[in-house]
Length: 589
Image 1 (spheres, one colour):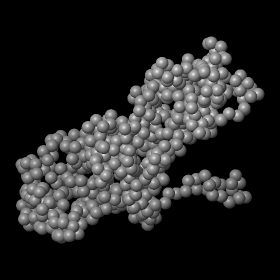
Image 2 (cartoon, rainbow, N blue to C red):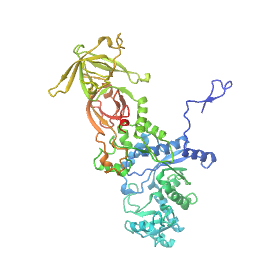
Image 3 (cartoon, rainbow, N blue to C red):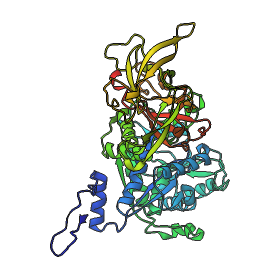
Image 4 (cartoon, rainbow, N blue to C red):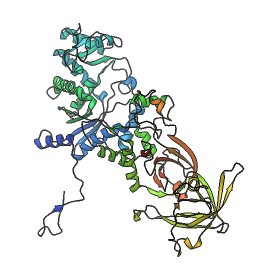
């Protein structure tokens, strides 16, 4: 992109230094080459989640890549639900996944389901049988495993491998008619039982399952296996680049086998069921490309383990702000921009690596530092009475909503004789280097002036319950002594005007870098951080209480907080800590 001179005749165009540099990685290079060579006139991608759970932060990388590349190259990206295993799937997850994709800032070109193509998959299976590329096998699941062999030993042919195409076609149709019980037979590809790639040792293409499907009801007693349905789904939709994580690299030869042997582009009659239903079809030959997953320490991303955390009550549901589901991260106050920034920073490669959790937190801090307005809140309140102010004194002080952006304007913060300060901002016996309040010492109340503690009030147990002090009138805003230097500056809220709030102080869910590592004893359940959440009662200035749900602020000197998505109300504020102002875990390493 260039920026032209105001007089094109007198000056050449100059580079637009504000334009972002094009992203460079091996996938984008493949796409650029395919477009330049004319192999593809347009790019089509897809995001194909199985609706058997909530999406987690690892899926954010796939979403950003699938949708981002399509947008970057003026292509299209479909959202396709891999609903081939109805026993494990739920419409609740379908709704949540759509919500997550849109929350991240993306919109799909077309919403598809693998179940849209069940008729096509079945016709493709019959084609493979007729051509001798697939057979019906009567081996049980245990027998199939025994026949498969090992990584160092070839497998053995099934005794049913040599059935004739007519016999196999008859059995397949009887499977389709629901004649056989679950597990009695499978349709298997006929490839190579001696292959070094275990995925090519006559893999299953269909299994019998008498389970009702949320979209097709009881019409199908057989369901396609993932590898078969995924490859053909991509071909049906005309997907040009099928982007998968590295664990599917060994599945790529089977993916290509399914696409090539079925050959939808050469056999458009297989797509007739879609034509009859008015469904779009773009038969083509997709290319599968693998990339490394997003791995972050101090987390678990297995759907099975996340499900266990929920079902065993170790967290408060899928959207618990400590969870690494997108729903949980959203409720915690993570922003779509922060997650997109994380994906950009991590980059795209074929090398598996583990990203430090601080990188994720740093992306959120960077986004919120620019995006979040400032407010004052006190989470561990201690009352400070300014005795030289008259009873009933109150005034409004002007504070900028954002110190780096004047366009955000200012707000009026009420100030009165009694204020709440943080309990941790006072010490009777200060440690070395202390810069906050002590008996007889001074500190600045942000925007209000310099205060001195004259009296410490304690209860019967000796706990400090109130400070009484003096506000220097010459240090008030606009006065001659307003710039007098003191060591510490404290935030505060007016005790008369502040709104009581529930403040949920969230931290990392796990206390060890690799919760999955069982070599040190125990399981991930045993490494839940006991301090991952602490609920306190604090006070917030009125402008914070008026926040909308999911609105984020920087509570000055405390951290970044978000008004809870569900529980927050202006008359009963609830704020979740999104992230501290600085990395508090680095010193623990």
